[in-house]
Length: 263
Ligand SMILES: N[C@@H](CCC(=O)N[C@@H](CS)C(=O)NCC(=O)O)C(=O)O
Picture 1 (cartoon, rainbow, N blue to C red):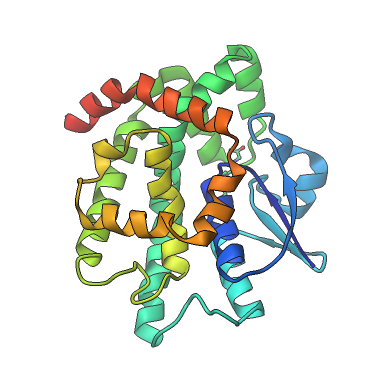
Picture 2 (picture 1 turned 90 degrees about the horizontal axis):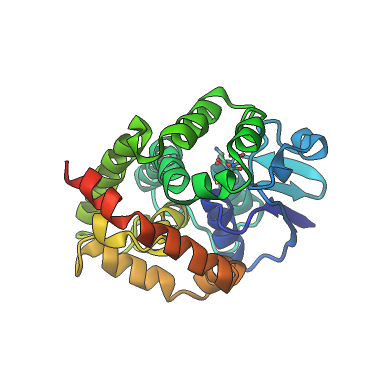
């Protein structure tokens, strides 16, 4: 049996859900509220010592790290393989997945914190927000969240995040001029990995800051968004009110973000 501990709009959770749905796998869902820091409860830390989502339980065995979960699923359930081609093609996909995890993931974390998470945390009062963030086990993540809580868009993490997004989407733009999908000729693990990070820009209504109209990334994302798995793995999990809130938060700081991106 597959059981997924995840949260509704977490990009890493969306990535794993995309793979589950693309492969037609059934799973039991355990949703954690990461704004309420349910991910830091002792019983969850036993499954995932970093206190992050997602975690997959396969017949009771915990599998952590979203990219490893995706590769694990692809190996454990080899029908509809999502890492195909020769050894070089598979290597290129793995490189995309690694760069997305190492660069784009913290970049989205910084943007999401500046745009929305900071607001959501501050609604509970600054002291409560700092107390909750101080429990985050990873020191780098903890410091980034505290910096953005204190400084908002002025935190250097935000300008760095914009630069990372520009660089990665520029590379994707060039790659997608030559092939239909990031993975090659099929929607594979590298596409599932990139999807939540592009989708997040649309979710916050800030896509125009990063994506050229009529360009290859826009074409790719339109095709991704038309897939049945995208509807089931991404859209269906986000309540309408939450979507409205995120888009509103994005619109409220669109000008500040655009100004920062223009510098
Ligand atoms: N490298 C991890 C990163 C997971 C991660 O950063 N998850 C975020 C949500 S996207 C999280 O759980 N955040 C909780 C927190 O910041 O307290 C993976 O790929 O699974």
